[in-house]
Every structure is written in structure tokens, then in C-alpha cells.
Length: 303
Image (cartoon, rainbow, N blue to C red; front, top):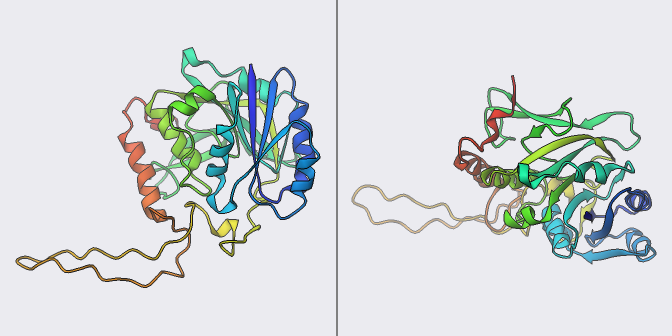
């Protein structure tokens, strides 16, 4: 079987040599490597130009991680798509361990590797479970928070994979519509997984697929066109529009009034062309509620 590794890179030059070397060292897989460079200003371009056999695409950083992944997927030829950040390196059997868990006849379409810190000293991400909680805005289910470090056996179903590193069957990726490019960073993986749930596809955890990750390495990089750091421009991609007018409800017997025009909200960050962050979280929550009861993964709860 074949894998297309799709890497999102933003000024990750210091990580690229090891990332590409450990991708090339993967055993038992036929590999295509695609790097989506998001207008890096470091030495990434020189490094990538010197790397034979790497397909390099260019994408504006302001569009975000999911949009870059989506662009890379369009150039992919592999049966499976492996999406990953630039600040990683991999155990030599990582992709093989992920591939062997994919089983379309059992409706398993996504495999999620386990992640450690870049030096391998601390565990960051393993089996995923929902846990009951009073209330959270950071989950598709307001009364379920997410636990990312459950020690689960290989092949155990989990609610979703991490967008930082995950493998998905290409046919299923296309069937569900791929990444929603309106996301900038965070929750794009939850959104993708909700669409998997709604179509009956499963995600499994793979402890033996090992990834080593320098977490948040790109968050302090500045997006030149937006004049802000990656960490400040989370959740919604695209330029900030002027603040939308508030609709004015008519009172009984009165003609509707024209909405008042508001000045651009300079202080409000993370606004996208169509939705503000609250609307995006509401949309994710709505998708979860609209899932069929048997497909909504509230059953994957650690009591």
C-alpha cells in the first residue's frame, strides 16, 4: 500500500532535515512526500530545494493549517494520506503501524499515532476519551471534556484523531469532503471527525506508531500580511472583515428599522469571512447534535 505524507511547514527549517530523513526511513511503505510551505521566511526554501523527491507546494500562511493540508491532499497519489506538522520526527515503523490498522470492511478509516515530546521524555497524546464535566466550550459536547492520554490498546476506537499527525484512507477523505479550509488552527480535527461519525466511519488509536513532536513550534511565528502571531490567529482563517451589523428586531406594530452600522471591531481577533469563533463552535456542536444517536461518540466516555 502507498502513503502520501503531507507536511505543513511554516518557518520550520530547523526541523526539516530530521523530519524528511525519518519519513524516508519508513519501512514497509511506498511513500510520496509533499511539503506545503506557507511562505516561510527562514531557510526552509533552500532546504527543500536541496531535497530530492519532495513535492513542494506554496500556500499563504494566513489561510491556516487545514487549508494547507487540503491543498496538499489535492496533489497526493497515495492510497492513504498522512497529515503532519513540520516540527516532528517518526519511528521507522510509524506509517506501517498506522496503515495496518485501516480496514474499510470494518469501517476503520483513520489511525491516530501516539505522540511524545521531541526529545522523547514525556508522553503528550495517546488514546482519546470524553470525560464527563460540568461544562466546557472546547468540546463538541458541552458536558464532555477531552482526555488525550488514555492508555488504550492498539485498535481501540476513539472519537477523533489529532490533526498534528494522523492517517486517513484517501477514498474516505474525499467522501467526507476533506478538511474544512475555513478553520485556521484547532478544532479542524473535531470537525473532520464529526463528519466521519455521521457516515459510520471509525478512528482507532495506534500506540506503536510513535511520533515525536516539538509542540507549538510555529505558534510564535508572525503572519506578515496579518501582522500577528499564529497563536493569536486561531480558529478561523482568512482576513478579518468589518464587524457585521446587529439585526434590529421590530416591536409590535412598528416598521422594521435598518440595522445600525458598527465600526470595525479592531480589538476582536479570530474573525473569519463568514463566522466569528462563537458561531464556529456552535456549528461544530450542531454537527455533533445532528449525528445519528448510534454514530454520536458520546459512548466513548471514560466514566
